[in-house]
Length: 471
Image (cartoon, rainbow, N blue to C red; front, top):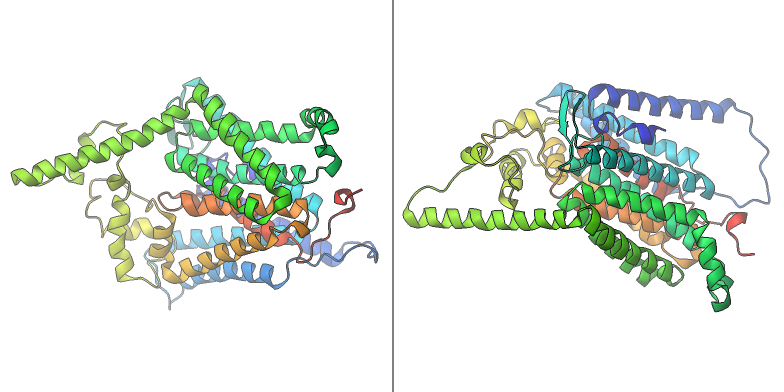
């Protein structure tokens, strides 16, 4: 339920929903610990396979997240440095929530059934948010949510503050849905692929939960297209293609269902349905960005030829309100933030302190308001330095390596599906973080944390449950 509730109050990107989320996570963690200590446990089944988790790798991944939280807290100490102590405390609180959620998944998700239930819950949360976004987008309404004004009908935002944040949330929910879908596809018995059973298999598919999952994926893709997010839709295309090629090379047994799923998502959802609901608008936004960039270059060239000074960012407020920003404009705060990184490359200015420190380094973005760097990589370095980026980067790379390790046919269909879906989520996160700030949104960061924890919840030596074993 927390995954469904997290995006509702503007992605939980305000203080009170963030504090409530952290409190709920740690209360659940405390209850889990108490039940393990004092709860009645059934005698162990000596015939059941031992499921010991992924061993040292899971502890190392959790330790990296704990170390990042400790590093943020160290910045508040007399030996540390932060320009915004209040914002740093909030970042420490957020990080404690992610640590608790990661730990909670490792403690509770101890079977394939629970893992599938968790991934299904993430998918359902994405569908709920997608349906809200579609309904609000179709209403063409104007409303205010938590002191934020919204105008629907331009780009779908759902209950997030911006459409790009919604797109990132849907990418993680789609990744969970892909994991569930591939797990179910991989469990098809061999005789179902014979010619005399193809019609029966097709009818069975139409009446199975696989069709429900497929429809849920379609709903989320529709909402993703309606966000008009260039980077979000681009990350989805690239991640889906990379993961499909990876599966084709690593898992012969999962090769066919993965190719079918990828082809259907691209051809049916994004080409056929996209023509009805506005995929062309996303392409138009990309073309408009390129045209605006060309126009900007032509103006700068003509100004240089005439000896006049080129137009600066100070003239930007006179531009039309909905003109597509160029790549130069999108990366304006990133270029200004480079001076911050040069001054304090290793330790940063304090977790969450970008807004407070950035005001002294504005050059090109003088007339603009930026509370984030519009790049998760740059903001992590400016806030926590290369030390913080190294800790989080090691966590992402370690989890990515774990997904590669799990993509083996001997692991079973469930594990291969989990590896494929979580691998897709990791790729989406790495791509979308280049020119966006979505991991600064609590709901999105929590979804990514759960995906990373799910990767490490798979036992080192996986033994399929009785319902998954071939009959």
